[in-house]
Each structure stands twice: as C-alpha cells, then as structure tokens.
Length: 305
Image (cartoon, rainbow, N blue to C red):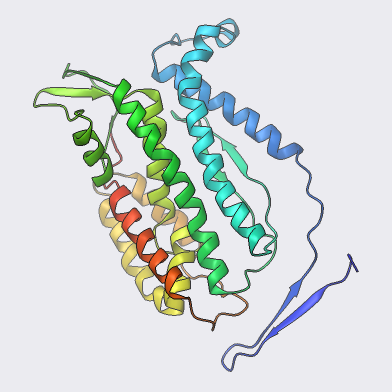
C-alpha cells in the first residue's frame, strides 16, 4: 500500500485535470542541518560586524573569540528563530492539510545580514482553497507574532544619539514600527538618530520579510492568499503590482530586483486540486487580517545608503 499512487480527477469544464498523489518519501535531514549551521555562522558574522566588534580584516582567531560570538549571536539567534518560525508555520499547516512538504532550507549569503532567508518545498499539490489559505497565512502570522517582541525589546535597548553626519546605512520604517517607536518613547527628535540594537534589527528584518512574502502575486504567501480569496480574478492585479514595484525602484533599487524575481517565478498561481470550493467566513476574515498585516509592515524604502 505504501508504494501505491492515487489519481485524482478534477471535473472542470474549461480545464479538466488529473493529479497524481504519491505517498511522501522519507526525507534526509543532512542538507537542512548543514545549511542551518552555515547560515547561523554567516548571520553571527554579520551581527558581529554590525556591532563593530569585528576588525576590518578579521582572522580565524577573531572568529573564535567568545566576545565576538556573544555580540554576533544577539543578532543571529533572534533572526534565525524568526525565519525558522515563519517556515515551520508553513510546514505545520501543510502537515495538518496532508500536503507533503520539506523542512526549511536556510540560505546563507555573503550579505550584511548573512542570509537570503529560508524556504520549504511543497512535494504534493494543495487540495483546496481552504488549505491554500491556511498554508499561505501560517508562515507570515508566525513570523509576524515573533518579530513584534523582538522589535519592542530591541527598541528598549536602542540608543538615541545626535546625528553625526557620518555615512551609514539607514533603515526605513513601516506604520507598525513608527507606532511602536512612538509607544515606547523611541522616536528620535530633530537632529538625532536611533542606533537600533541587533535584536531590534532582527525583528525589523522579520517584519520586512513578512511584508515581502505578503505581496499578492505568484507563489508568494500573498499570492496563495489572494488566489484562495479571489481565484483567477486576482491575476488581474499582477501587472499593477509589477508596475508598482518598478515605480518604487526609483526610491530603492531592490524593488527592481524583486520585480524581476517575481516575473521569473511567474505571475500566475497554479490551481488547487479542488479550486471550486469557496472559502468559509473565518478564512475570508483571515485574508483581510493578512492584508492589514501587509499594509502595516510594508516599508516603501527599506534601506538608504
């Protein structure tokens, strides 16, 4: 029985489809673990560099310094937990809906944050729109919930200092971050800047990743949610979203890269096996909540160099 394949036929007048559902294969965890360890190292290195604890030309002994690791881990640990929580949200929701999925793959990178994020891979089709909504929303909700306390703790540990006028990387803010900064008295007055603590920066990245994933297009989390709510009608928004990102690229070049990635991934969303079953009221409200989260976490200009 374990080797049998189940065929599912969807009676659709315009697009009849046959799906093959194979039992999940046993997964090997070595690659997941290796990528996790490497990404933990690269994000720790990034955290130490941001904290000013790493010389311009570090050697291997610097990397083994306990002081170096302590400073770096204050950034890498919360960031890795946020990314892991986001992806495990997808993974657990997939298991609940009997969709075969891998554990998270982390992506180490030689960037100033040390990673390109993480992802899971779906190994079987999603059965219906309810499952699509739950799987798409679970990751952003999990990451969002964990990012908020990191931002709050980070703000409490951050310092407000006079603007030195020196060249530095400045991060943008969202409606949510502006509100939290105001709530906890960390809005810098004119002529002052806030030096964000590594924990707060990890939370900032978590909220930024949430907003990126909630862009309602393609196979992003937002694309899953939009397709579950609107069906193929949501594809009409795709061109508008692409041009919006291209317009925003005049203010931050990263939006141009993101638009190209989305175009390469494809603007359309593959249908669920049962794409005709409607969402219930609770999941429609969940979709509205996800739209609100997208709006309050979106950062038009994430970085100013």
